Image 1 (cartoon, rainbow, N blue to C red):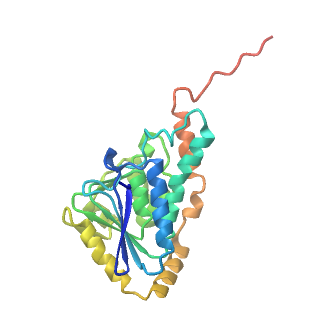
Image 2 (spheres, rainbow, N blue to C red):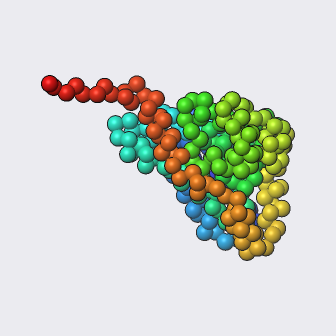
Length: 251
């Protein structure tokens, strides 16, 4: 069974990400599959809106900290290349020409929340929440998430979300501007589909040109070019073997 599936219906596509366990965490294979889905939809001129969703229980718990394909500790360059796929993933979804909506049930944590921020809109069920624990874990927010978060909620709230590991429930997320709609539990996808169909009613050329023009005015993700490298650096420094003793010089 594929982790990522695409369903198309009358100008709207639904992308489902279901890893079959592990809290739907993003391993390297999942990132590649979601990048491939975005690339396929970017070429589809019949699709005018795209909904991204996880499982009925969880959107995504973030980056998979136990995926050996990501964390090649004996080769930092290989780890850097693997982690850069997360940045490419969020860029691929942010640059989709269609209107994009994340339909969130349950948790969207860390990289899962950053992926949701890369979409144009987010619909949360009333049992869903967003959480960005990276800074409290000694890591900067990567994958372009920092400028996207700050542009949506402002600098003070961005700092509060990051520095206090605040769990943003659906109502708080809506008040802050992170959620564009709140639905009853189990109905996030249905509400996101309704929003997608509204957007899909626009003539496709006008929709694509307008989205590109708006993003050009407000997208600051280009300023986040080093965030993934900073994430890796902090991760390496936190390892027990990160700092080796200086070799002793002979007299």
